[in-house]
Image (cartoon, rainbow, N blue to C red; front, side, top):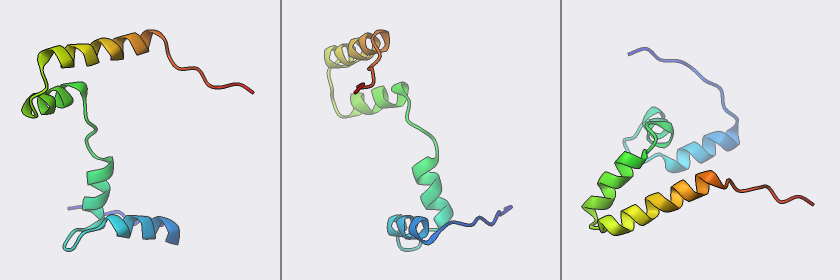
Length: 77
């Protein structure tokens, strides 16, 4: 396996080390946090596993579609 050395400041190191479990490498911590991002399909699969009704999922889907048509605007001062 190829490796790459990186430099981080102490604050970043401390944050990273707080998330590191016993027997876990820093690479594993980074991959767990920044690795594969969840998708709507993976959420839907998970939601089915925790027994959310199709009606509730459809309502969530409709809400997301509505929001995409009306993006939030930044507050201006």
